[in-house]
Image (cartoon, rainbow, N blue to C red):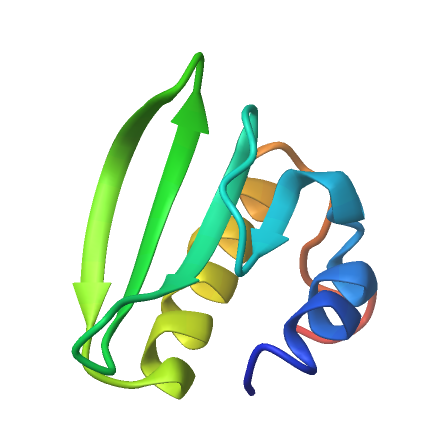
Length: 87
């Protein structure tokens, strides 16, 4: 998973595209940003402030972290779960 494919993966989970901003800061969105030393940052931005900030050394790890956070939020709200008959 990388910045080219994360929107496709999140779309499968039912996460609206406007909830994630790749490469640019946007209010009321999870931002996935490259930083100067070849690292990556992931954070929620609201009213110009950053929340739940995390930093990673690679694009792939940052994307997997963000995917995991948003996948968990979809499970917690009941939007995704175990398929019927899978247990």
